[in-house]
Amino acid sequence: MTILFRSHKVAARGLSGVQSRRGTVGDEWSDLRKYTPDDESRNIVWKRSTNPIHIISKRRDFERSLQLIFCIDENIGDTFSFPRSLPSRAQWKQQSLSLLEMSAQKSRFPSKSFVGNIQSQIQTLLKTKVKNHLIILISSNLEALESDIHVLSHHNDVIIIQVEHPFEKNPNKNVWIEGKVFDTKKIQTYQNMRREAKEKYRQYYKKHDITVLFLDTSASIEQPLNNFFKYRYAKKR
Image (cartoon, rainbow, N blue to C red; front, side, top):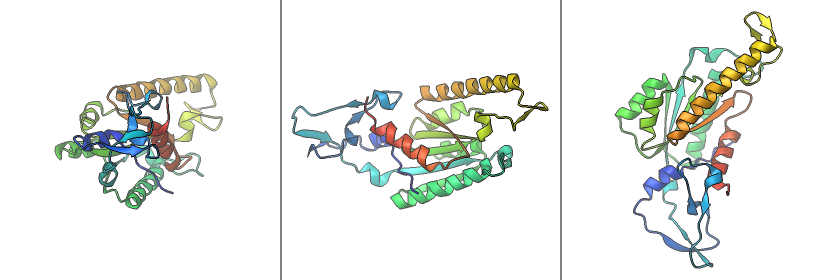
């Protein structure tokens, strides 16, 4: 299992001033994509050179120098697990960190990992003036660290992964809410409130070019993150 990291946001900064070269149509197209501010895959514009048998491509030097930072937020509620057959959020976060670190090592990308209070981690990164990194934050707290992460994203590509219990997304008859089993009205109210909170959270960060992914503990981080990188940088309009 390997995560294939990509960051054209970091690459664009790292390649500033780098000369373009001519290439044949067999060259990779990934360097030719132009992104709109919201960086959504459906808004990617593909560009060809005026010569139909040639294309312009950038040197891929950034791939050898992509630097990664992984921040894992510890939350008091993460040790809870339901159902018992699934890992707790704390276990899922640790498994995910191991996979991220292993994937970075396989790709020969230098990486650093931080585990603990997410606020302290972000303050440390701001004080050290980290720049041109792909930063992946894994949290289970919807209380946005808006201003700090916004500042961090000025010079870095930031991805926030919010991990949930499966029942948080889809409460079922096994879930107790206020002492009642499967109270349909209360569950609907809960789902509506959580949906609104998640959308508000996502929209805030989207305005600042920060990606938010919502995952749960029922599956590995590998496939969702690989799909994200693939379609973020490979899907045509």
